[in-house]
Length: 212
Image (cartoon, rainbow, N blue to C red; front, side, top):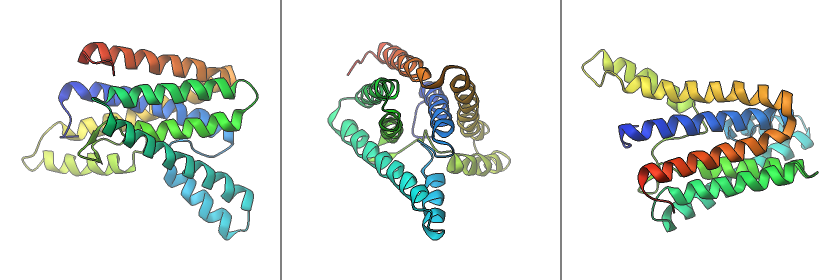
């Protein structure tokens, strides 16, 4: 978190909330699989393999593989683009395609594209080829929050732990909203998700004075 400017913290929080929203939609629709949390899917895959429930293991493996492809696409976009806007537009395009497929009888393909979008999202705050802020997974963020809280009592930055905790809270709130929205709208909620992400991308471009 130290590697991003204070004004970028808001963007990170908003994107984490969107990631939580999308993950909850995928989790409910897929019946217990994740589109952004690959640690959970890895456990599902490993346990499924050990218990010979190959369908479970295969679903989890497919999501992990698609997420990995999304990470690659995001990393390529970050390297080739002039700013993080390239990555944001890539994620926006993947979400739109996911919404289109998900609402036209190809819901599994839509879920896989959501997975790819979440993989790509983690390249938004890439620095020197490394992820400065993880947006779709929060175990490490909670660990950092606890560590920085100790630092705050021993002469360190007094607010850094709150920034990490805020990212976790944003993911949780987004997840709550995502599950609730899916309950009422089904996969039609993906159109709203793609539209909302597009709006965030446009606003980010206006604030930064960059559109690509």
